Image (tube, rainbow, N blue to C red; front, side, top):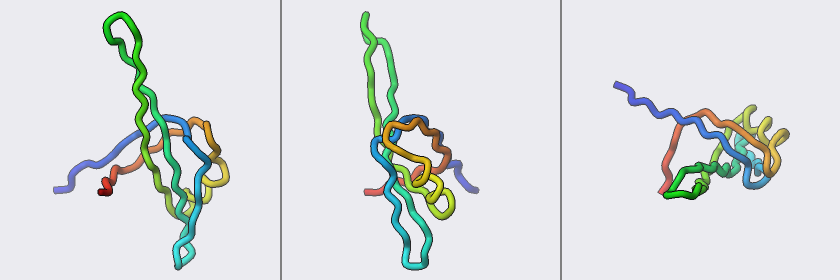
Length: 84
């Protein structure tokens, strides 16, 4: 049985995307996304920021490099991969 591994992240680009190419010529673009969560703690509103590293491949990677720039709001739908 396959397990579900699906995420949706909406946030802002922390920096401009960086594009690299594999030895076979496939584009890989990486960029960090910052997301904010607001919650009430006592009488005040608190803000919690989380950072996620995103990696895109092939045609999507080329599009992300062309259209992405620091501060742009983005939504990413994909799978989660943990690196240690």
